[in-house]
Amino acid sequence: MYRSTTVAAAVMIAFAAAAGPAQAVVEAPPQGLFLTVTGGESPWLRWASLQCELQPTGTHPNAVAACWALEVARGDLNALAADPRPCTKKYAPVRVTAVGTWHGRPTTWHNTYGNECELHAATGTIFRF
Image (spheres, rainbow, N blue to C red):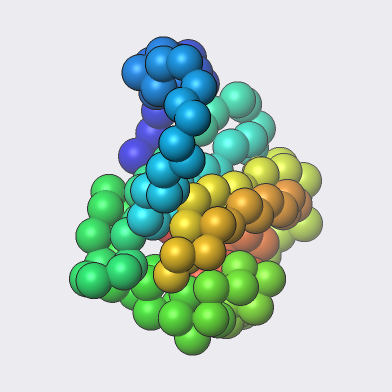
């Protein structure tokens, strides 16, 4: 899913506006992860949602495989199974983030890779959207 940074910014502003003023009661965070990939040769942003609690759902195109990879890694995005492949050394950095909850635990993770091939080789199916 390709989205411009302008659309992403508008979505984030809309969510912030919908939240309204701070509440005295702390609510449980929404289940699932919000995943982003940004960067490359020209500014761009892709995003997907992924919920794995009851059954794999969300906007991720391969939620089943992505949830399975997270299960195997026990939710540790630094421990994802690699998908080794030859990559060029072309430097076109991409930054990835995962924010939300994993099995009720708040999760915030980010990393930068030299290019998209290196990203996919290191993270498998999680950021393939």
